[in-house]
Image: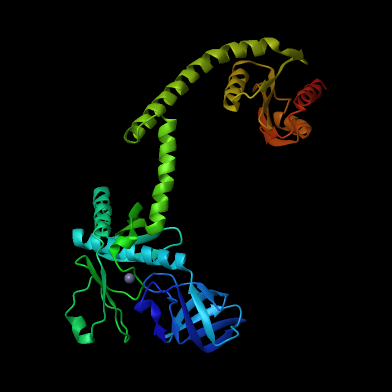
Length: 397
Ligand SMILES: [Zn+2]
């Protein structure tokens, strides 16, 4: 079988003869006399595409034969084949970008690659040791300089004897097959079975997204080619929007966010101060509005869109400082109602938990609590008045 992808990595369409068809689980595994479908390897994913107008779901190599998996059996033995080029090009770019990054880390810091992963959304390369941010940023600049220089890729297929005299970044795979050596100028030389672009310029951009410690290595997440370009363009839109929103230049954006945070902190502090003052008046007003029912002061109030945190604070304060008090608070907020029933500790006969449980069905709600404090939330905000009236009726009886 002729491996066309090694002869010319840019073949997108070709015609081939079917030599063998294996039927496995109602799928047809097709072996051709030649193929441009790369079966995957070196961390790179396999090609997909079409054969005879039918979708190729998987491509794999077994005992030196490359099989193409189809749902439908081709009618003729001579078939037209096409590669899903977007997928292949993307795969080549991410894979080759990893070569470039590994080469850069090794050249600059003598740091070897300990692992690679080419993912659907992003890819990673693990570099031995723990790297600092400035080292990683330096490599990003260096890798993009390598792209700018458009260094051609050389593929060597040396004999076993010649191989002994070539220094490689990593150990050779243990195989009897011909070993392909990928050389990127003086940057990197390594054995690899993948398919690669013809020069570094094709990558257009390598963008390091983030990094983290991973065992004894630093795991570096990166994008290249169209993925990197798309990412930068998308981020630029966000950045422009953020700058416009904060009325800031790009370089002053962090400062603008800091200023905003400081302003918010101050507003929160001021609000707390005011809240304490207002709550004293509110407390007084609430106590005065209470009605005496069976020697108990019963206070009821419905708030609209009040901060539930503020209500809870008020309720706690009143029930702690006053005796024989029951508070029935309703809070009508967006698509939701909240009920807070509370009583002072000296009231033993009235149980807030059982009271709220009798009332909550009126507002289509659920909740509960202790004998002195119970809370609930419901979805029917038209019956809030009725709920409070029901609670008062139960207390009266
Ligand atoms: Zn490779």
